Each structure stands twice: as C-alpha cells, then as structure tokens.
Amino acid sequence: MARITRAALIQASNALSDSTDVHAIKQAMIDKHIPLIAEAAEKGAQVCCLQEIFSGPYFCAEQETRWYDTAEPVPDGPTVKLMQQLARKHGMILVVPIYEQAMTGVYYNTAAVIDEHGKYLGRYRKHHIPHCNPGFWEKFYFTPGNEGYPVFDTSAGKIGVYICYDRHFPEGARALGLAGAEIVFNPSATVAGLSEYLWKLEQPAHAVANQFYVGAINRVGTESPWNIGKFYGQSYFCDPRGQIMVEGSRDDDEVIVADLDLDMIEQVRNTWQFFRDRRPDSYGPLTDG
Image 1 (cartoon, rainbow, N blue to C red):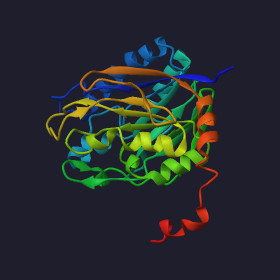
Image 2: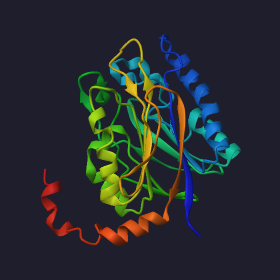
Image 3: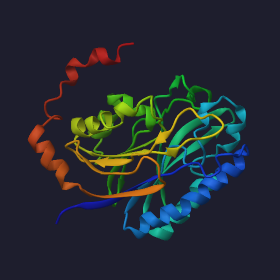
Image 4: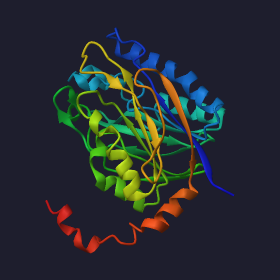
C-alpha cells in the first residue's frame, strides 16, 4: 500500500497592518490562524506548517526592542500550548514557527513540532541569520540556532524544518536528507525584488539533491509602516524530482494542500543514488574556517 501523506501550508497577511500595538498584532495573528488551521484539517491534512514567525508581522524590518516582548518560551509558552490543543482537537501534526525566548536577552527564530495527539516533539532553531538591506535586520533579534538539524519521526513521515534564509545554504538541507527527512518544510518571509527569482530554484534543487519533498511557505501582502516590499506568497510543494506539485496565489490568505507519495522517495533514490555516490572524504575544505 502506498504511503500517502496529505500535507498543508498556510500563507497569510498581517491581520492588523495599521496597528503599532505589538501584543494586539500577535493576538490578532493567532486568532486569524485558528480557522485556517481548522480549514487544513477539514481538507484532510495530516500535517500542517505555518509561515515564519506566524504570530506577528515580519518585524525584522526595523530594529526595536519592543518586539522582544512578543517572544515566549518553547515549549512552555502560551502559543505552543494553544497549538498543542489545536493539534489534539484536529488530530493533525503542526509545525509552528514562533519567536522563542530561551532566557532574558537570548532569542531564537524557532519552529515547534507537535504531533496529532498534542505531544511536543521538539524544535528547530534557525541557523543562518541574515542582516542585510533592505529591512532584514535579523541579527538584532535572533541568536543562531544551536541544536543541529533534527528530523522528527511522525505518523505522516519523517519531518525536517529549514527556516527562510536557511534555504540559501545547501549544507543543512543535506544534513536533513542524510538524517532521513522525507518532508522538509521551509517557512519564510521574503519580498518581491529581493529573492523572488530564487524562490522556485533553490528549494526544488534541495528536493532533487536530497530526494525529499519540500513545502515552501511565504506570507502575502505588504506590512506597514515599513513597506519593504510585497510578500508574494506562492507557497508550494515540490516532489523529490524537483517538480512543483501545487502552488498558492501571490496575494491571498490560503491553505495549500497536496498529497505526498512517500514511496516516490525510494524510487528516485534508487534511480539517482546521490547518497551512495557522495564523497565526504573529499569535503574537508568545506568546513575549514
């Protein structure tokens, strides 16, 4: 019997684009996602991933300490606790990207993974932290991830997470593949005019190089007061051959759903044998300096 996983991605715009109240924005975004999560469950999704820092705007467009107040512990903060309740209610695995406070003054860009029974399985902390113009001042907010590239064994398959800027670095994607990942989610916040030309190149390339499925998520709309560009959506799934299976719109809040045939991974790996033909003995210079 084929191993089919129905998976979902959620892309959404800022619920309070004109507000400056960081706590009101956070609550509005959480409230906005609750029915979208329910929609994913109604569509039969076994696993659903939200967008990067789903409970806020992309606040890294400015450098202001007020956004530190929106961070919370993982897994013991209220948002992850709520997501555990929703996962249990809907019987659906959730990948929840959130702003994590590890301790006062130490913050991470994190994704919590929760199984369909509401059990917290673990987290991924974003490794590669950009700090570049225009408006991607992430080093002001995030410490680089320090817990490796975990793969979570779930009823929907073996799941890995890579977050936004991570996608520009093939090494972590390879680490996830070697650790057995079958589905890798990449929740993102990226705008037109910067990296859009790479959006459908890099992640299908990761899928091909490692023969796994990729679920790429990008938010939509513009966010005041920064207006650093338009978040262009186009969230998608691609298969282990790098072919895009289904794609969201550029403008709309949307739940994107696809059926992933996990047996295809073995078929593609048996054809290409990229893992067999690796030469790690020759890669030493990659980690020198």
